[in-house]
Every structure is written in C-alpha cells, then in structure tokens.
Length: 410
Image 1 (tube, rainbow, N blue to C red):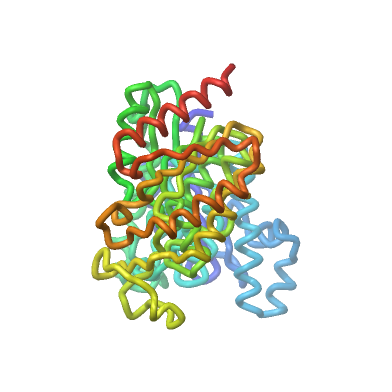
Image 2 (spheres, rainbow, N blue to C red):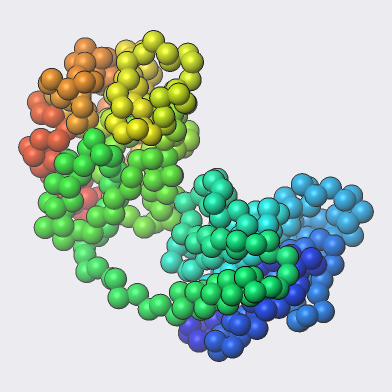
C-alpha cells in the first residue's frame, strides 16, 4: 500500500469532545489526507462527523460491552478497558499497513487512552498528542515510543481562539510529519546498539569510530532508564545485529532504587533475541539520584559525588557489587549466541580511575570476582589491564565484537 492510500488515525473521546475533534478532522482532510476515526468515549458518540470505529467496537476488542461500562459508571475501569480495546484496534490497523500517522487529543483520560494505544505503533510512524498534561511527567505512558506531546494550553473542551489555533497547528504538524520521506538511510553492513553515560563517553566514542570504520552503523543509548528500556525494546524488534553494552549502570539503580533504573528486564533482550553481545560492567560503581535532598534516608552515611546540581551519585559497596556481578552473569548465561564480558581492571567509570573520587579497586574486585564465579563456561570473560576509557580497551571491545559477529555469520 502506497503512502497516498494510507490514513491518519484520529483517537479520541468523541462523546464529550466531538466539536473539537470535528475541527481537527476537517483540518486534516483539507490537507488532502485520509482519516480513520476511533471513538474511545464511553458515554456516546458525535453528530459532528461520521465515526469509522465506534466505542462499542473498541469495548468489544477488550472483551467488554459498552452498555455494561456505562452501567458500571466506573471511570478508572472504563479508561483501562477502552485503552486496551483501542490498542488492539490500532495493532490490527498497523498490521494491515493502513496507517501513516496517528493523533490524539485529551485531558487526563483521553491522553492516557491515546498514549496507551500509540504503544502499538512502530517507531518512525509519527504520533502526536495535543494534551493538557504536556508539562507533566508522562514518561511511564510514553515509554520508549517516539511520541510528540503538544501543550493544549487551554482544556480540550471546545473551540475558542486558542484551541482553534493549536488544533490547526497540530493538524498541520501531523500531516507534515506523515509525509516526510526519510533521506537518513545509512549504508552499512550491520547495525550495533551501544550504551553510554557521561562517565563512559570516551570509550563509547572510540568504539563508535572503530565500528564505523568497519562499516557498521552504531546507535547509542543514554543509560538513564528510559534509554536502556528503549534499547532493549528495539533489540527485541530486531533492529540490531549485535550489542556492545558498555554502560550497565541501570542494574545498580534497579537494585538500589536509583532514578536511572530500566527495570528488572534490563540486559535480557539480546539474550532472548540470540544476537552477539559484548558486555562491560560500566558505571556499576554508582547509583544515580537527583538533588541531594532526594537521596533515601537509608543511604545517608554513604559516599556521594555531585555530578551536577541535579545528579547525585552514590558509590556502590562490596555487597551491592557482589549482587550486581551475580545478576549480570546470570542474565548472560542464558544466551545461546556468542557472549563476552570484558572487565576493565583499572576502573569502570571516569571517576573510578586512579586518583578519582570513586576509585575503590577492592570494591571493583568483588564485582569482578562475582562475575567470574557466576559466569557459565560458554560465556567468555576477559580481564583487561586497562581503564574503561583507555583507547586500548576500546580496541579490545570492538575486536571481540567483530570476531563474534563473524563467527555468527559463518
């Protein structure tokens, strides 16, 4: 199906916001686009425009009757059910390759439903939500998806001089985004995912340069929690030929309640996908918190370093490193693909170097020993007498990964 034959998906609660959605639909049609409208409102529909997929169909997709939802009058339950139904519908439309972009509008409930349904839309297909909540933390609802939030300024409750202007802009934006033909294709023999932090930037930059010279495209992910989650999701989607996981610090945040946790599934995707991976315990010397007054009380007597006014780093201790080493090794033991753990014996972060504020070789040794003691025989563990940001260490990482990729091809 050509882009001309595809439609822009409009998601929203047409029962209470029919007028403003009618204006959005009109503006999109005026751009020469096709539309598919999905009503996620529970209490009724609209007479402003014909609806393609009504709320009763949305509810049925989640296994419920719209009549029962109206009878129950449980707003939270209704939003949950309509979110699931809308996501199922979007998934089917995507499978038919009939969607070129998606747009939603709403307050709390409408935004939640739209963002939930947009999780089914692959990366690269534009997704925009005009919302009253644009300034709030919607990271959980957005997840790893490339969703654009646009502030509605006023409530999405009707047409006025402000809402009309912003709806017009939103319509123009989604239409323009839908018709972008990417010229960003990179000629490469493969694609590598790599994880980074400020504390490992030197290593990552050098590895990227070396991999580029060998014909590979490298995509770097900032290990802030969202970055690791996104990398894992894209690995599962088959976007990469191999992984160079230099910065596994998100494991430490997950263990200690830091702000950069990527959850318990971090470091699982490459193993599940069965692709080569080289893993480094990069920045496992630290747990990330925000401003100093946000550090949990149980850590008040620990060792800290202010990376910036809003980033407070806590040095991990021996027991945490013992646990982290075991976790890292056990996750990789399950891989059927070539897997290597490379240990930089002279330090695992920029500030864990001789003379650095987190330089504690005895604590690192606990980590290294735990990794070696728990790694399966099939996992190659290399000890390198270098710091993580030494050029020689980068060369070893790239050489190890390229050899793995070659073995996999053979």
